[in-house]
Every structure is written in structure tokens, then in C-alpha cells.
Image (tube, rainbow, N blue to C red; front, side):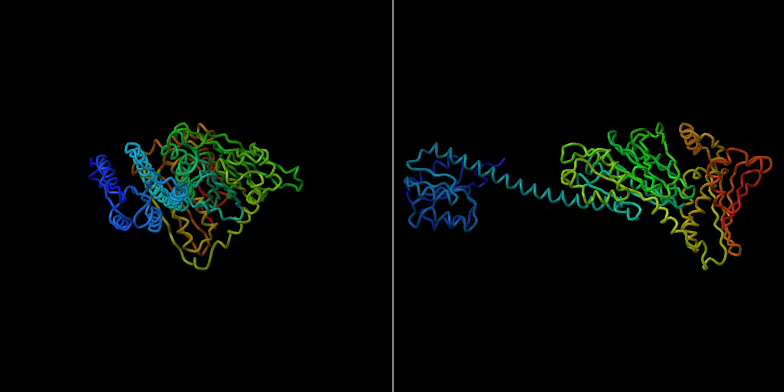
Length: 563
């Protein structure tokens, strides 16, 4: 540790009284400080320009002026060195003028050195603390600046990865109000390869960045699995496993997921830990007779239960041809209004009944009438889905199935064997492959649906010999998937599935054949058709979407023609 003298602490004494200046300088030396003695202001100005002075002691009267001239010089040069004025005068006006110009203390002769030094130490300590506070403030401002830059970068990355502004369809309207820099709520949508439309509203526990991190995982998983054509039930199980595995025990994500299944004309609903979903039907113009159906949560939020105990309960209803759905997090209904009471779910329901799809626009315009938007306690997110516009959007995408550039033929063959049967995503590129040859998007999606269903049946019932009747209830469904996953290590190269797709331009037909290594079933085709394992819920959809359907005996080859 360096001594005080080694640190070169200087005190400047300005006094033409030699006896007084020697007495003061000797006393200060004993206290561990270096002393510079000047006889007038001109010498003092020179010393101030060469040394860093900790304190100035100046006799008010100088041969070439007064202490006021020194104070003017310090102010002009923006020198912040503290000053103590020594004088034998008791003129109040001079003392007052010195204090106005920045003097920190005033000592009257004759000087008691012990009391004088006590004042000096107090003053030096205060100045030192002020200097430290200034440095700390500068450091704090630097840290806050860096923090703001990091938050800006993190927010940019968050919004880019999550794609938070992707709800640009006119049938999806939103109102969002975050309580912090980062929102723990998010609305995402996506279109599956089979043409189905997915919509998710998720609400993560907590606020700010700690709430946004789980949302990023949910968003990336949601987009990836929807784009690859995974079913809603598979999506939910994967989301729960990911949130449970990658987040602390006290962190979970409540959410509502909707799937508009245009091929089956169904709406699938999963509510995990969220407020109820409202669906309003426009069967008549009388508001009092508009049917409002609510779907309360029957599932735990994502991440609470481990994968082996998690069960997904899905509602399935007919896809409405008109009306609206309303999805919302608990932020608004728990937000306190100007009347110091919660906004409440009844008020929100009333607004939805009266405003329908205009609810979010109304909240954007009139939210301030209910509460201060600058004092939001929790993230607020509300979304409405217009079923009539959704249907029109879907129908508008049904363009001509075949274009002139498709003259000719092609064959698309895929053969997969061994454990990768349960893990390889070999159908994800099928849509893109078909679109290259000019097939309409809707037709590509129909083909994907048919091939995905037939391939799944070939794996589950042909290779693995699973009984689809297990999927008739939630517990059986869980057992079904558990058994399916347990087969992964047992599969060999002798277990295979082959998919062949041939385009015959002369007949404008797409011939699809899916075969597997299973033994099939003995007997004729009528017996095969009656076997429950081969007539799951996907088979009727395949027949609906196809021109012809044939199950070739002994039951391990399926042929379909689409046009």
C-alpha cells in the first residue's frame, strides 16, 4: 500500500504572512501532506497550472488582489479544487460573496490549528466522497448504456427468432401490451404442408427477459414442427417435453393452440392453463341470441409435468363457417382499472359479444379509458380469429391443380429402413418437390396428407403391428406412443417402408404406392378392409382425398390415384 506522501497529495497555501504560512505548512507536513506556499495570486496561478492540488488555503487579502480573484480564476478554468478562506476580517459581505463563488469554508484568525485541521479533514473527506460518487456515477452510466445496448440487441434477436410480427393475415387481429422490455406473451401462426392453419397464444411465467427465454424455445419448436407437418398432438407432446427439459422447475408456459383442419372440416383446440377460449357464432343478427361457446383449460401448462406423465386433452368441433374466436392471456382480466378493481373476465366477454372481431381495434383505441397503459402489471395479449375470412383465405388458395409446364412424367421413390423409420423426416421436402413441377399449393398439400397418413399406417400397423384401437382414449394414446418409441432400438434393416410417386401427364393422375416389410394379412381385400388396425381415422380421409384407393393383399401394399 502506498503512503499518503507517495500519492503526492498537495495543499496550496497562499499567504504573504511568512510566519503564518510557515506555521500552517509545518503543521500540514506533520499530517502527511505536501505543501506548496505562494506569496501572491500570480504565483498561485502558476502552481495551479502545474500540479493537481487537493485543497487551497488562501488569506482573503493578497498583495495583488483578494480571494475573490482566485475564485473567479478557478471558475473560468473550471477547476473544482476546494477552497478555504482565512481572514482576520469579520465583514459579513465579504464572507457571503466568497460562499456565493464556491468557497466551502471560512476560517477567522487567530487560527486554532487542531480545530482548523479537523475542518480540513472533514472537507477533504467530503470532496473525496464526492469524487468517488462522480466516478461511480460515470461507471453506472457506462454500465446502463452497455445494458441498454445489450437489451436492444437481445430484443432485436428475440423478435427476429420469434418473428413476433408474423400475424399479418387479415383474419387474425391482435392487441398486445408488454409490462417490460420483453414480453412473456406471444402470438404465432403457421401453415402445415397439408394446408392446415395453426394459431398459438402462449403466456410464460414471470416478466421481462426471464419470461421471454422459454417463449423463444416454444416459438422455434412450434414453427419447425408445423412447417414439417407434425400433428397437433405430437406438437403438444414435444412442446411440453422441451419446456420441461430446458427450463427451471418454477418456469412453465400456459398456452392455447388451434388447428383449422380444412380437409376434415374440423377445429382442434388445446388449452393448457389459459383462460377460456370463446367462440362466437353469427347464426343470427340478434346479439342476445349469438351463441358463445367457451373451452376451459383441461390440461396442465407446458413444462409442469414430465413427459411420461403428461397427457394432452384436445377438443374437436366442426370448423365454423363464420363468427369469431377470442384467445387471451390473464394480463387484461387481472389488470386494475382506474376504479382500483380488476378489469375482469365478464367485462372482456361482454366486449367480445358486442364487438366480435373489432375487439382488438377497440382496445387499441380505448384501453386508456379503463387503465393507465404506462402502469401495466402483467403482459396483456388478446387475439381474435375471423372464421369467415379464414375460410375465404383458404378457398382463394385453391388454384388450378395442373399447369402446362407439367407435360411429361416423373417418379419420386423413397426407401427407409431400420431405426431411422421413427426419426427421419423424409416427407418434409415433398411439397417443395411437387411445386417445382407446377402443382397447385392446395394439391401439394392434399398429396402430402395422403402420403403422410399411408406412411404412418405402414410404420405403425405394418412394421410395428400396433393396434390403433389403443388411441381411442387418452391413456391408451399415451400407451400407444410409449410402445411405438420402445420399438426404436429393435428395428433392423429388414424393417422398411417404401414410397413411390409417379406422375402420368397423359391421364393427369398421380399414382402413389406405399409398401412395408410387414407380413400383411391373409385373405381377400374385404377381410382386410374390416380389420380395425387398417381402418384408422386417417384412412377415411385418404379415401376422400383420392380418386381410387386399393389395399393389395396380403395387406402390406397400398395404392392410391389422385387427380
